[in-house]
Every structure is written in C-alpha cells, then in structure tokens.
Image (cartoon, rainbow, N blue to C red; front, side, top):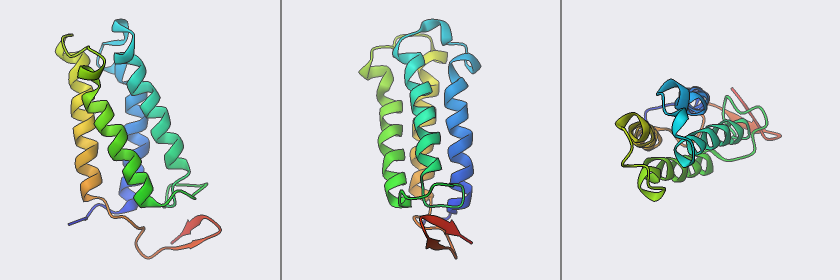
Length: 130
C-alpha cells in the first residue's frame, strides 16, 4: 500500500539531498576522501536537481513524471547502499560505510510506500496544481 503522499515525498527528497551533501562532515568521514565522500555528495546534488524537475508539489520545473522520479530514486539508492562494496570502502570504520547503506535502504523503503501521482492535482504546462 502506497501511503506516503507525493507532497511528503518531495519534502523528504530535499532533506535527504541536503543530508547526503553534508554527510561526510556530519558523520566524520570527509577525511577518508575518494568514492566514500564523492558518492553521497554527487547523489545528493543529483537528487535535488531531479526533484526540481519532477511533476509534483515541490517541483517548480516539473516535467519528470513521478514514476520516473521513483525509478531514479531506486537506482540511486541501490548504488548508494552497495557503493561500499563496489568501491572497496566497506572495510573502513563503520561511520564511513554505514550511512551509505542505511540511507540507501531507507530511501528504497520510502519509494516502495510513496504514491505515484500527486493527489487531487492536475498537470498544466508541466507544473502540478493543487
């Protein structure tokens, strides 16, 4: 059952995007460098950018359909969760790899429960209207 409205999903998109960008400093692994640091920053920026272009309440330039947005979320989240093993930093301290896995898994759960269309909205000229 999909019970998370797109309006809530959109807020989470921007919060998680910003959190990913600051994650290396927030969790104290910025000094590790390399993929462990670059991946969350790039995915955070990417999440914010494609959210701006999604057809939902928080997408001012909305032209990406919500189901496509959710597919982007799944691919990016799987990549984030698996990145410690793909890029070989799973052997680092737990504060380095665990945020990647937890955030990746959490976003997948959110996607599975997120609605695929804004409720009570009509789409006009690429923008969602309530």
